[in-house]
Structure formats: C-alpha cells, structure tokens
Amino acid sequence: MKLNLSETPALAVTGYGPGYLMAGGTRYEHALLIRPDTPPRRWPLAGINELSAELLAPLVEGEAPEIVLIGTGKVQVFPDPAVLRPLIEARVGIEIMDTAAACRTYNVLIAEGRRVVAALCCPEME
Image (cartoon, rainbow, N blue to C red; front, side, top):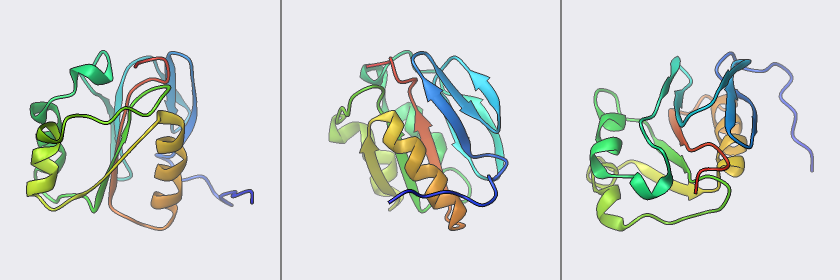
C-alpha cells in the first residue's frame, strides 16, 4: 500500500540519503532533532554509538512527546537500555529503527497530529 499525504506538513521529513536529511525542504548534513512545532535543530551526534542519556534528556523537558523515534542510521542498532533511561522515566514511548523507517513513521505520526520527536542520524551514520 502506498501512503501519500495530500498536503505535506511544513516540518515533515522531505528527503534523506547518504550523508543528508531534509526537513521542510531544507537539506541538513548532520544528525537532526525534529518536532512538528519547532524548527529542526542539529543533534550533536556523530554516530549512533555516541548516543547517551545526556543527549536524550532534553527531549522530555517541558511538554514531553508521546513518542520519540530514534533513527539509528543505515541499519537498526539498539542502544544500551541505560541510555534510554530519561525517556523511560518520563513514560515516553520509544521506537528504535533505521533512519529511513524513522523518517516515514515520523511523517505518518505528524499527519495524525501526534506529539512526536524524531532524533535522526544521517543514513550513513552507524
């Protein structure tokens, strides 16, 4: 089944490929944090192996999202559960997937009006 949004939300992920992510039509060549209600911002992560609880803690400050999607790069990599502690303690849903799947899932969830954050490594980052 093919899913198409009749109208692309302004902060949708509009593309991805080796070494880049696109959000709202802007190309980024670094890891990215994206929410439907704020401009995308750089995520200070060179690769998924650098993921830490400190990098995830700010995602639940203020109004916590319903779910955080973590795009791990070209392939799915599960982080140590201790790294996910800030999200678990805030009772936020967590989905770990490759970045391509996280981008598609993010777009579906924002089209549904869900409170979601996507924390995305560029597809080549493993």
